[in-house]
Length: 159
Ligand code: HEC
Image (cartoon, rainbow, N blue to C red; front, side):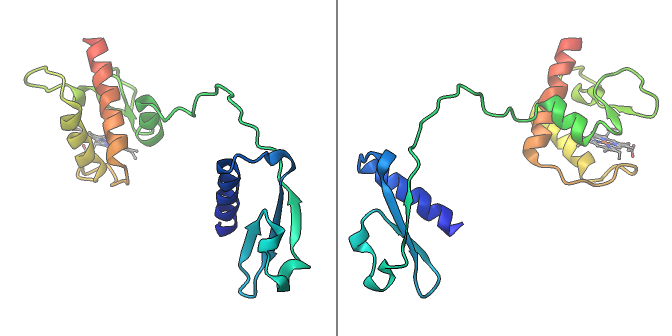
C-alpha cells in the first residue's frame, strides 16, 4: 500500500514537473528498514544503495477518456430486490406468501404518499426487527431511503 502511494506520489511529481514520462527512468532502493524509496535522479540515491538500486522505465502515461459512465449505483428497485425481495413484493398484487410493501408508502388514513423520510422510518423499524416475524437486519440509512424513494415513486405511478 505504501509502495503504491509512493509510486502514485512519484508519478504526480513527474507530471507536476512537466517531464516527458515516456523515457523517464525511476530508481528504487530498499533501505535498512526495508522501506522502498523512489527517485528519478540517480544522484539522490545514497551511496550505499547506489549499486543495488534498480532502474525502471516508467511506462508512458496515457490519459484515456473512454467516455465510460461510472458503474451505476444500485437503484431503489435493485436494493429492494437484493435486501427485501425474498419476503416482500413492491406492488399491491398478491404474490402468495410475500408481503406487499407498496401500501406502506401510502398513509392508510389520508391516502397521502408518505415522504421518503417518513417511509424510511417505517422501513427502519421493520429492518430493526421490531416486527415479530421479520428478522433484524443490517441496512444503511442510504439504502432505506433508496428503497423508500423507489416505493414512493411506484405509489405515485400507480395512483
Ligand atoms: C426474511 C424475510 C424478510 C425480509 C428479507 C424482509 N422482510 Fe420485511 N417483513 C417480513 C415479515 C414476515 C413481516 C411481517 C412481520 C409481522 O407482521 O410481524 C415484515 C414486515 C415488514 C414491514 C412492516 C409491514 C407492516 O405491516 O407495517 C416493513 C415496512 C418491512 N417488512 C420492510 C422490509 C424491508 C425494507 C426489507 C428490506 C430491507 C425487508 N422488510 C426485508 C419478512 C421479511
